[in-house]
Length: 225
Image (cartoon, rainbow, N blue to C red; front, side, top):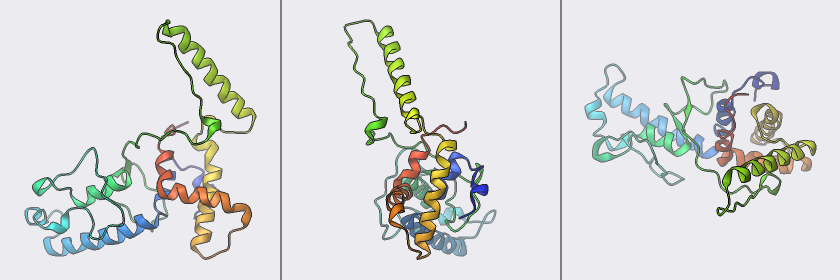
């Protein structure tokens, strides 16, 4: 990967891409997708001379990919073609969580907003880290405003306690990017066949989770400081 100095200016969205592009399933999907895309272009042309009326009648132009290794989770906005099918490039975006044309995972430089725009991430599951979970109950038979103020005080106090213990609360791009950079270095070392020390085993597992689905969690953080 690029050095820490290079990734110090990455945005939230660029960090998410840095993990997704290392996902072997995304890499395989892109390989199949771009091969189909080039075959379609060979048959029907490229803009501005593409014969789109013939293109959209070709079953290859629609998702899912042949032999896809993951189910098609298309939800929300769709690019519908013939018979309400989903155009292949839109199917790719819906599967992996972005808008725009699918990007080559081999590219190293982070994409800008004109090249990659993320879809709203799915609703988060219940927090698995007990340190970050705070359950608060309300009595609906009583006035809500004072209960809301009390709940706010508890949340602020809990966040302050976590920070005193060295935990990031809330997590931000700034306070997470050093850890993310370490994860990327571990992933790249493993991909290059290098040995990973036992001390880094837990961080590597976390990095692999980030590559699989955790990159979507990055998108729940504030976009800017």
